[in-house]
Image (tube, rainbow over all chains, first blue to last red; front, side):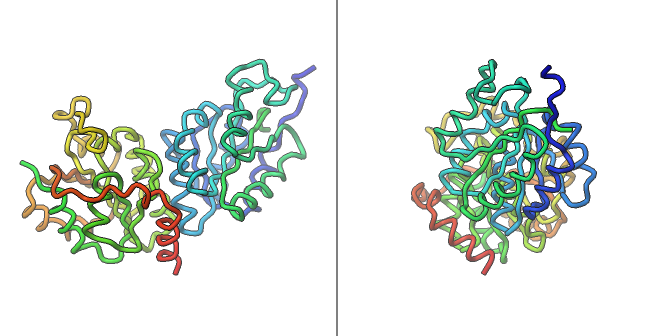
Length: 171
Length: 188
């Protein structure tokens, strides 16, 4: 009965992001987070939304903002994460920048962990992040949202990137 | 007609004031030689990303002008940046592209369809209202103060040829020292 597995709460995710003092969000739309997170965020006065053409722009925008003392989050789908690996490698990892990424895992089955997905394009993501030395957390359902705050705080405190993999449609 | 890039940058350096300058590849190396300054941002990391770093800096510090010295090969790798910048509309962002029609840092191979590319037209088409192109150093020098004073985002193509060679100090631009110097200067 996988259809009844609840996804994370978009309102709780927005509160968790705001609680980490994030005021800028750069985003390429993603269907996992679209209705529950990105649309509400676009109407939420706590955030300035920067709509992107391509995900690697966001890696650099978040980095520029970090130099000015502002915290930011980059939202995208896992395909955009894969497309941006060189920018993430150079800027976030080798330059030690706190690029915080919220990544919708399009196509992942609700009942399995990301690395156990039957879909190649989904299950390869955690091992790739492991090889790159990038911390990643999984947000699957209600109760997981608050982990975003701590992950963002760690990224800025330790000057390194973090990825939150969103495994079910945000509600 | 084209200008020497180092001549262009010397002109720009005289009008730089306390602006942040985000400079990449050959323009970046020339800029570091001609106009060393703690607010030079050279930590681009990945080709094409200069203007995106600059957008973040401009949004985060609306009190400071942010000047981008892009390359034409670099900008072609991230053309969507022009629409993103136009939408975000930072009034303090000034985007120059040094247009020489080739991948100068990688063997000077030509850009695809280099002779036909009209970057100001592309920028206008992306929504950047104020654009310009310069291929004469005297005209550039005369027009620069007003161009820099125009509320942004603004965009200009600089038709250039290489001038005197500059040291290609890749170790520095990728160093923690370069990032620390910039951050200290910006926040100090």
